[in-house]
Amino acid sequence: MSRRNIAKKRTLNPDPIYNSKLIHMLTARILRNGKKGIAQKIIYKSLEIIESRTSRNPLEILEKAVRNTTPLVEVKARRIGGSTYQVPMEVRAYRGTNLALRWITKFATQRTGNNMSLKLANEIIDASNENGNSIRKREETHRMAEANKAFAHYRY
Image (tube, rainbow, N blue to C red; front, side):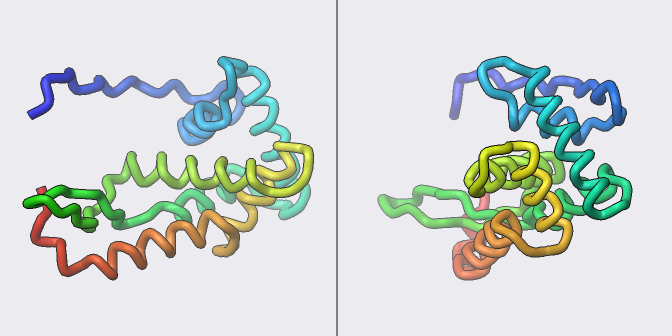
């Protein structure tokens, strides 16, 4: 049994322009070296790019992208009797959203190009259209969980 304290859940303040907690979470994912202003500029610029490309509300497109990328199940390593099993577990809503945002930012960073706001906008548009690397990652996670369904009785 772990002796560490359980991390307390912080209350999220919505971002100042769109008044959205999702954008605040995305800002935390893009944040580098404590430069929150730069992270917010990147996000707001990418939302402008999304609006100009799709001529729809960029917040709805971001929400749809996160909804499409959120995994339902994941695998966790569980050690039983000297061997390690990949046990499929259901993902809670908050963790699913965090994973989706993490994958979107990770694959946006890996895209080719030099402008982060443009890369982020492209990744969000791709995720909302159900293609792109973040969607592929979700499918891969679901496939892993499906393949290891035999070990589901080892849940804790």
